[in-house]
Image (cartoon, rainbow, N blue to C red; front, top):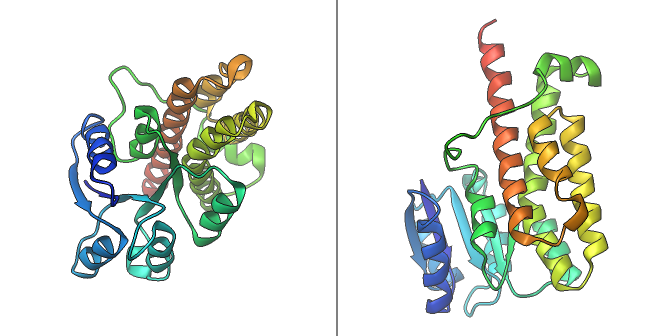
Length: 238
């Protein structure tokens, strides 16, 4: 799996590359700024995941995001914006352009692992605990295509939530962070993701523990993927 790290600050770039490397086995590539990254991708580079700093010379992270999302060739790529800016204007602008998620500086290993969860095998002993997809479809009155669409949308919400919750805590908004966690818990309940729901429920008393939040988010992303795989396998049997 290819992971591209884009940052004009060489120290920040090295730190982020180390965190990716310590999280699993990936082919880690680097670019010194947005223009360098864009030229590499135009030359054929297709990373599955891109971590990109917001503020860079020549081509900013926001401008690179706009170029990437305007080109269908890069649709499968997850674009994670790396920023020290926690203002809602930046978050809203990036969301409007189609960002996949955020990492708020200073880096935390848990933040990185949330976004790598979709590319990494689950840890030893991890078990997928969820309602049978047929039971979820019957309860919600939907078919398997709609359930897969819901799971895909929820996965995007989970990926974005990591940086958003970190930004809320950095702005001194613990109530907003707890509210976001509560909504994610409700999403897990609605989609029958029992194990992931329990993980978020355990955060209720202290939603300000960043490491535990990141672990719960990564676990939920794995659950979404496992449930989607169950649905696809069951459909292939017919």
